[in-house]
Image: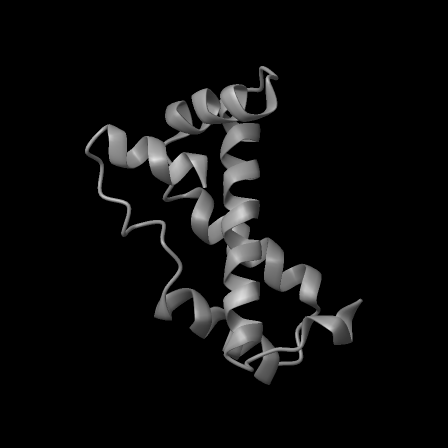
Length: 102
């Protein structure tokens, strides 16, 4: 992910945005509560958005999409990618079955 590369280039710790146990617990809790998958994604996006460097997100999105967006939109797009990554990890670990929601 380009955003993670940019963090590394600038010497910023990437561990704060790398999906881990905390994010998987969000998914596990949602499964137990039979939460709608869209709500899970929205919760993960909110979770990650607060951890994202908005200015760097804006620069990264402009480089990748060749499109100028505001910092809030850029942060949302990066957070959405990270949320999707969490769901992929959760599926690999048999916490969820994404195909069930398609």
